[in-house]
Length: 197
Image 1: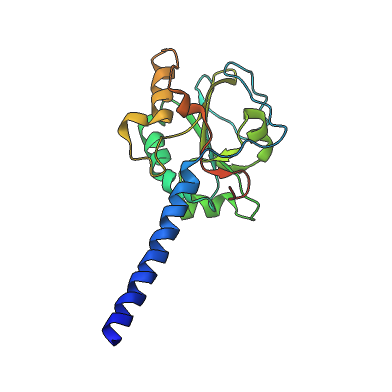
Image 2: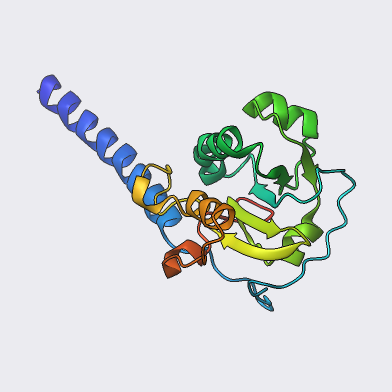
């Protein structure tokens, strides 16, 4: 009888843990709700950036919108770092931290082993039409919006065929038209600046 009770208890415990992971996966596989009063910023728009950093002129700017408290942002950091490694000579990179917590740029750089500048400025997100993390924004020289969207179709950035941010970078560098499937431009992840759905 004790073995039956222990087995039943273990089964219930595994069911609870499995349900938690299933629900968590479901929540982050749905698009992020569009905020009330959201105004979309179309591709080609000139973005007025007030960034107190100097960059190598003539290069496109890649903005990585990141919330250290968002599971999707944490899963995505390896994909972002891969892009930096592959294209640091071609683009300027910035991490735009989207959190209500008092993280310093140095804390984020150390915690996630990030070598590019980290800034905290939610106005940049509004200017670019970003309301979710993680999101990628690519600005052409002259700060024209080239791409705003997802890194990948999957939460863990494992689908090689839907590496949208990488595809957008390659399209820009090859002067190709940025034709990606609609899913590339739909926001998924955590609502900015808080990690809520």
